[in-house]
Amino acid sequence: MDAAFWHDKWEKQQIGFHQSAGNPLLVAYFDHLKLPEGASVFVPLCGKTRDIAWIRDQGCKVIGAELSEIAVQDLFAEMDVVPEVVDLGDLKRYAGGDVTVFVGDVFAVTAQLLGPIDAVFDRAALVALPDAVRRKYAMHLLEITGNAPQLVVTFTYNQSQMNGPPFSISEDMIKALYVDSYTLTNLKTQDVPGGFKGEVPATETAWLLSQ
Image (cartoon, rainbow, N blue to C red; front, side, top):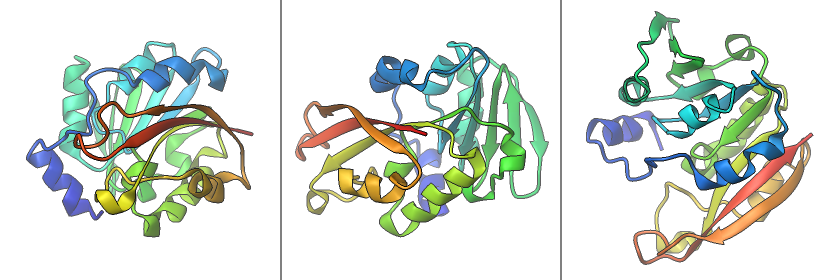
C-alpha cells in the first residue's frame, strides 16, 4: 500500500480497522513483556489507536509512528492532550502526556529519534504491509529498536478470498522474518468472530518475540 492509499482512508474516515478500545490480546498478554515502570514502548503505524492510552496508563512512555497527521491529531484530541508539535523535516513530532508520535514514513524514523526502546507492540503495522515491503520493515524495526522484545498481533486467512490489508501472516511468514533474532512464542490463537467482512474465516494470534 502506498502513502496515498492510507491518506485517502483517513481523509474519508474509512477506518474500519480502528478499534474503539484497547486490543483484548494486548490487555491479556502485555505483562509477558515484563517491563519496568516507566518503560518506553514503540507502537508502529499506530493510527489513533486506544492501545496507546492503555499502555500509557500501565506506567509506560509510548512512542508511535504514523503516516496520517489526521490520525495523530485525533489521537491527542481523544486523549484530551494538547501536544507540542515540532517540524523535523521529513517527520513531525507530536509530544505530550508521556506520548510521542512521529508523523511521516516509518522508514524515516531512526534509533536516534526514538531513543532507548524497551518493547514494541505491533498490532497494525506488520499486517498492513504487503509482502514486498514486509522484510524491509522487519529489519528496520530491529535496527531502530535495538531488537527490543515485541508483542505482535497477526491475522491468518485465505488471502485469495479477500484483498488486504490486513494481510494474512502465517506462522511460517513470521518465523521467516524474526526467527534469527528472537524466540517466538504463540501466546494465543483465536477465531475472529464472524470472520472478515462476515464472509472470510480468520484467526488472530498474539506472538511474543523475546530475546
